[in-house]
Amino acid sequence: MILPKEVLARLKLEKGDTEFVTHAAGGIKLTPYNPEFEAPLNAARDVMKKRRNVLRAVTRSSMATSARPPWRWSCSCGSTRWN
Image (cartoon, rainbow, N blue to C red; front, side, top):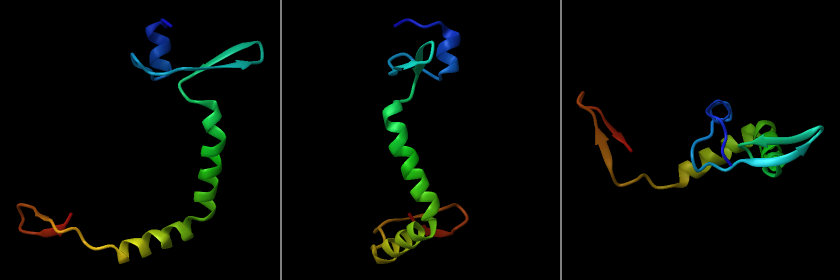
């Protein structure tokens, strides 16, 4: 499908991107996002928002039990940090 440059810019599309066409009241709707993926994504966002503290605790506990990587980097100021 060939679209005018203004439409591509508004939808933030580039050559080779996928567009999704859905039926809407009075016609069709063209969007760069998959509407079938929107509901599960919104549900995941709700869970992450409501359970923020639980997710943070899980992240901390998994980071505490994981081994540090064997490499380090240093900056020009002489400070050494784990990567």
